[in-house]
Image (cartoon, rainbow, N blue to C red):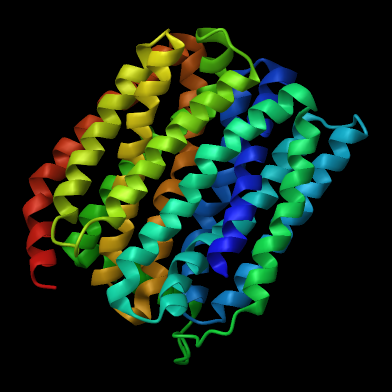
Length: 392
């Protein structure tokens, strides 16, 4: 039920994301405002996701997920209304991005923690995470390509409208589920005490600390590259919205292959090595993509970049969910979610500020190099993570 509901909803989400980036750049011609919209949509996660993680260990996860999806649906319809009435302004987009960011800040830790409730067996968790990653990246592969054609034929507004209706599928599937909550134990401590407990636990347990530091570094300096894809599509590769769709779809295809690759792994013993390799692949792929001026070459390079990106993050999620204590699951996956949701907007703002001075291509070359440096730093801590996995 979750799979079928999410595949429809996520398709709409990726169609809207593509259309929103294209609309912002069409209205403003500003790489900085592209970064600002990315910042506005994700900065709530920096402050709210850790708190959401505390509540993910306390309250009914399914009900909260249904509420966050409903809020995002309302925002999509609002964006469509503004577009079709020809009243949309950049401040509207920024405000809607913030509201969506609040919904996403709660959605992410609840959704990751909810996976175990749906499958009911920890031995199936790796496949559940891989399946979840597969459906996300199937939508990432197909949605932008569809969105590129929809923008060219009908305009951005229809993309927002389609996304609004797509949320009904996942809301319906969540409401129809009958699952047994795993977080039924009562918490008597304060939210701040529980938050501090989760932070101390994550810091003192070195394998969790090293994994979170790596994905946080990549989330800050690497993942913001996605908000600059409209610049590459139009100004560097001299294309239109369809070119943007092809780039985003190629990245999604690489990510989809990465999800299949992760699902094919037997057990979790090889995951630390996979995380190290794919973090290096992501950094190298990003450096190469940033310097390409040929459309076909760019699509090929971003394919491998997408592969490295999704395998690194999904494998990290799998490891964290295997080694974490159940009563702290929500808080740890919240910190994981914050690494690519709460940290990434800070990177978007920084890169959006730097890129006008040195150019988008040089900016992303530097970020790819820094991602490689982060991977090499993690390689020094790799034995600690590998030893912890060998004991499971």
